[in-house]
Image 1 (tube, rainbow, N blue to C red):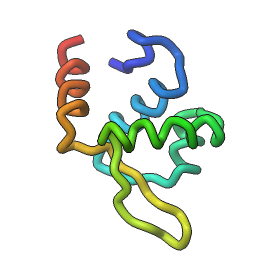
Image 2 (tube, rainbow, N blue to C red; image 1 turned 90 degrees about the vertical axis):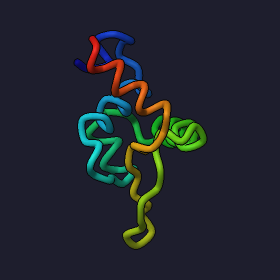
Image 3 (spheres, helix red, strand yellow; image 1 turned 30 degrees about the vertical axis):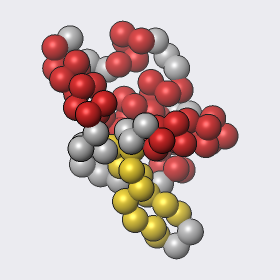
Image 4 (cartoon, rainbow, N blue to C red; image 1 turned 180 degrees about the vertical axis):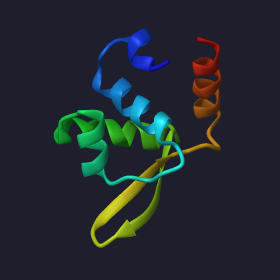
Length: 87
């Protein structure tokens, strides 16, 4: 189940849903913005919060672009994944 159905249609929730559904892959900001349907400027406000809370981690660089991935070692991410299993 998507978090969006439970917590509503907010940019942060759409980003989390996208990353949770694709947790084995890493993405550029542009790819996250496009696939999560979140404005790029809004995404630039969201990503630091996710990174500061260790929900996402930078994985590598391709040119100037930094790729990000869901942090599967994060306790918060583990709790979110467990929550998604139960609903």
